[in-house]
Length: 113
Image 1 (cartoon, rainbow, N blue to C red):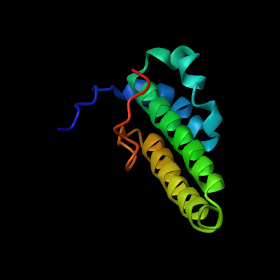
Image 2 (cartoon, helix red, strand yellow; image 1 turned 180 degrees about the vertical axis):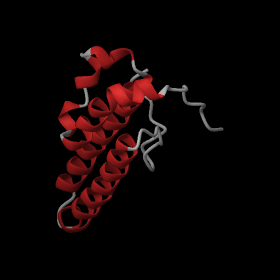
Image 3 (cartoon, rainbow, N blue to C red; image 1 turned 180 degrees about the horizontal axis):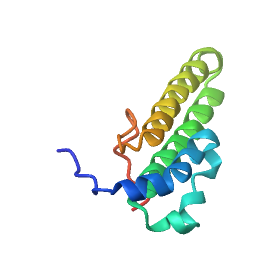
Image 4 (cartoon, rainbow, N blue to C red; image 1 turned 60 degrees about the vertical axis):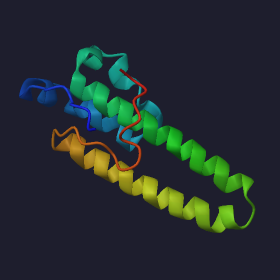
């Protein structure tokens, strides 16, 4: 069953859109909205969670791709990076449009409440 996302006002979206976008551009900066004034924003928290999930997925793809010789290097890594790059673009566009849409495969992971 789909989880109901909190309703966010247009003020929240307009005020925190840059915070929601920054972690998609540089994934290691997912925590920036959590340590600024945006920490109380449902919109910024949602996208920080998506960015953290994306960052962890990058680590998993890299680990698996490096551990498995040949197939990992030439199949898993490139396809994994491509998929995660597409997910990053989807998240970036969603944040820029002020939407709270889950990323494919990773969107249901809730780390940041």
